[in-house]
Amino acid sequence: MATFSSLTRPISESSLIALKLGDQSPNSLGFPKHFVFSRHGFCSFPPGLVHIQLKPSLAIKNSYQTESSTESTVLSSEVPILSCSEAIERLRTSRETYKSKEQYLAMYSSVFGGITTDPSAMVIPMDDHMVHRGHGVFDTAAIMDGYLYELDQHLDRFIRSATTAKIKLPFDRDSIRRILIQTVSASKCRKGSLRYWLSAGPGDFQLSSSGCHQSALYAIVIQNQSPPDYSGIRVVTSSIPIKPPQFAVMKSVNYLPNALSKMEAEENGAYAAIWLDFDGFIAEGPNMNVAFVTKEKELLMPEFDKILSGCTARRALVLAESLVREGILQNIRVDKVTVEEGKNAVEMMLIGSGVLIRSVVQWDEQVIGDGKEGPVSKALLKLILEDMKLGPASVRVPVPY
Ligand SMILES: Cc1ncc(COP(=O)(O)O)c(C=O)c1O
Image (cartoon, rainbow, N blue to C red; front, side, top):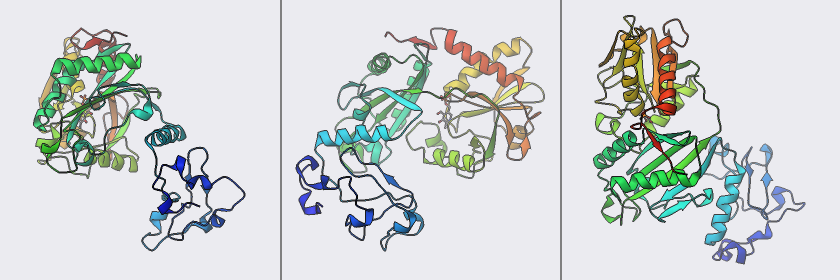
C-alpha cells in the first residue's frame, strides 16, 4: 500500500491503486490504526479503488473521536494527490453516486468567462470570498414555458443587495441580464429555475475584499423533477433569532439562520418556521413571506421594512386587487401584524418564488380558519400561475432558444 511520502505525485503515477478489490477483509488491508471507519458508511471510490463497508464491530475510532462522530464518518484511507484531470474525473464520478431531484443544466461563471453544461465543471474557486466569508448576494427567477418570470424585479433586488453588501458589479445591469438569459438559453430549460450570485470575488483568504481581484458573477439553471405540491401545511414559530433588519432586507448568502429555522420546522413535523421581529410582530418565513386574510376579508401582509421584499408577495398584492373588484376581498393592507391577529385569521399563507402560494392550516397549536386551504389562498395561487403563463411583458421575459 502507498504511504504518504509516496503520494506527492498524481495517483495515476503513484502506487495507491494498490487498494484493489480482492478477497481481503477490511481489517486485513492494513489501514493505520488511527484511521476511522464508518459504522454504516459505504465509501465509494472511483473505479479501480476499493469499496469497503464495515460492520459495526469493525468500527475503529481514534482518541479524538466521540461515539457520535463515528456515526457519520466514512472510511478514510490515505489521501491521494490528484492531477487536475483526475480531480475532475472524481468530481464527475462522485456526482453519479448520489441521486438528486435537481438537475443542473448550465452554469455561467465570470471566473472562466463562459457557460458550461457539464455539471462537474460547475465549481467556484475556494478563495472566493463568498465561500469562506459569506461575502456574496444572490437571487432567483422561475423559468416557465420558456419565459423568465419577474426577471427584472429580481434583478433590481439583486443589484440593491450587491450595493448594500458593497460588491461592485463586474458588468453593468444590461450585461448581467443578457448573461442570465443566455445561460437559460444554453440550458435549453423551459421549466425550472435560474439562480445567480454576485460575489466579492476570488483573491485570498483575508476578511476584507480589498485583495479580491474582481467581483464575480455566477449563474446556474436547475431543473426540478418533483411535481409541485400546493396542499395545506403546518408552521411553527421559529426559536432561531431573525436576522437584524440591515441583513434581513438583503438577499445575502448568509442563510444559516434560515437553514436552521427550516430544520427546526422539519424536526417538529412542520413545513416552515415563522419569524417574529425584535418587537414581536410577524416577520416572514425562512425563504418566503407570509400573508393573512382577516375575518373582515382583508388581505393583511407584514410591512417589508425589516424583512426581504419578496417579489412574489409584491406581485400578489397587485394581483389581489382583482379579488377586491370581485368582492372576494374587502381590502388589502400592508401593516404591522401581531401574532394574535395572525393566529386568529381565517386564512394564512406562505408566499415566495419557491412555494408560490401555500395555505397554512395550522400555526403551532392553533388551527387556522377551518383547517383547510382557504378560498383566497387558492384564488391567489391561480392568479400567480396564470400570471406566470400569460402575464404581461413586464413580468415575462422570453428566452431565445
Ligand atoms: C427570507 C426570504 N423572505 C422572502 C422570500 C420570498 O421572496 P421571493 O418572492 O422574491 O422569492 C425569500 C425568497 O427566497 C426569502 O429568502
